Image (tube, rainbow over all chains, first blue to last red; front, side, top):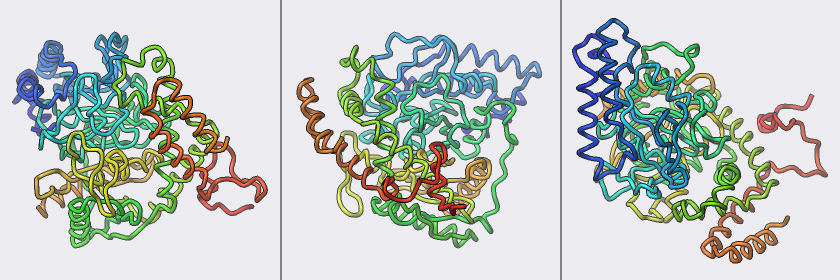
Length: 447
Length: 67
């Protein structure tokens, strides 16, 4: 069941939040031992909140489409009274003294929190394999990664352990697991959703946003994450496909794709063209510089945040994350500043690529979900490191700050999900989501 | 600092701290730093005066004409 399906039934009392929450908790009990999506499950708190939601709705105090909906939080966000582990022993003694801004916004919208989801330790990875609480597994194929770093959140949505969830995205950590698990992930424009109360990876690049079963569900959650005075219209209208203008990012962002990802993406774009969408080719001239720019920024910021605990508690990090953080400490100031200039240049080039189109279109993830433990994957042009491939199509829009959304576009012959990414103009996230809704419907009709 | 000198010092530091696993990773970081320093948008202090302020770097990339 989606949020959009449950909300009207909850609002008129045809469905009880307590029952919906019990169903999610049952799914967690059944599937979490295998998939390891949750670090903390708050069953008693959730059931109490659900009963309160039912009472309030029955009493005429309906708050909106998230009221009574079971929602999970990536364990990088504070929820008052609970640990925020960041999937690390470094934070095993932490208890949040207050809600993160986003947690508070969702709570005010009536969300029922069912637990905190697993992630790549400190969000510093793309596979959710390095977690102090054990690796997470892809629900489509448990021998594969769910993507990351918001891997647990993506699993929760894909399996119905929660109807909504919150992730974070520094280089793709919402969109990558969304693509790998066959769901929707929305990275809002940088700065649009508060990061207060969220453990940082890179304050230059961190974003908070929803993962969801559908574009509409992503919209409902996104809208509730915004400050009240910035809420957009509660209902979402699809953009007309006829006349929709998409800019297809050629070159670097299509150069190193898995064969199935390339085939499905090109077929989807061609199908949209036949339905009346105008597709033109656009480029980001300095695209090849993006990994180096990204690396120096995220390393510089992560090294600053972790400097004390790398000295005082190095053994409390997982081995791989500790090594990357140690490497991060060698970035020189001159190169960090150079990367900041590069970031601004990429942002301007993405703006230019968007000139004359409504959104950019490209794959979300160069490869299907990789096997757990894989260090490289085969792609066009030869094998490449998994981490590099997983970040390749998403990190440009963390550098640029533009809103971006991943939605399912098909599967490999083995049934592994493939994601399509749309990137919108700054200041126009609602228009991006309207376009995504139209594309989601077009893909469903074509399938 | 030149990258070759930095890399040598970084590797010695990692070795001295008992982190030999870092050494191949530092080679990768050095390659990324070389790439960053070689980018064509880097300044050359002997050439044209920059037209962007610190907070307005995007102005350069937008190709805004000089007034």
